[in-house]
Image (tube, rainbow, N blue to C red; front, side, top):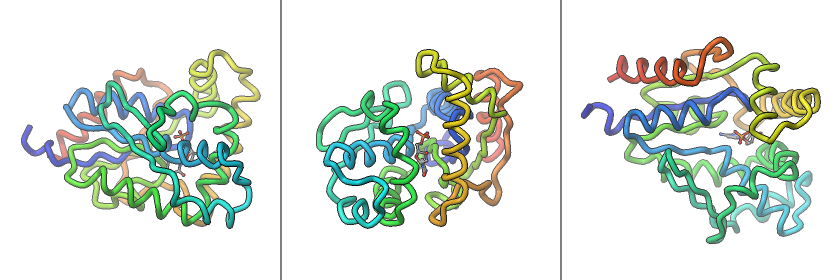
Length: 221
Ligand code: DC
């Protein structure tokens, strides 16, 4: 157990791969903290939209990205996110934010600012961190790195259920569009980090994926 107290577990992968449920499940099982870095990019995007910053203008986004005060609560059972003291947990999941988050997260100054905040939270370890560039850029020395994927149809079905039954074809094409931007951007693209274990969750239940990752943490400790 003691080996786990400072452990850092990095879980990367595309949208809808089941990263959040798996990461929270692993953190809860092992008594670790949890950080959803996607929520931080969403919070930044929400702030930009609220302040009428043109989100497709990288210079405009870069100029203002130091203003929002973004804070993440790391309890895996009740993760929280606030911007300037406001609870934005629900607001950051709207289609408006989802549609704007990829261009905002391609801006290098946004990534640099959030990287700093993420490292402050990760400092000291004992945490499961999910995102796109955790094992490659944010925590390259993580004790365990997982690259979690699933077939696109399974990811679209999961995302559509989370969003209350949105049209599957529309959800699938929006996932594919975000995948394309996230994987081809110059700044910290989504990639399989060196040393990461690639897990395709398509044939597994959530419990099985959690079990598998807990096994990797045990093996690393
Ligand atoms: O995990 P998510 O779908 O909530 O992430 C939202 C967006 O944030 C996603 O389109 C890409 C971006 N993101 C990123 O660029 N780097 C991360 N570490 C996490 C998310």
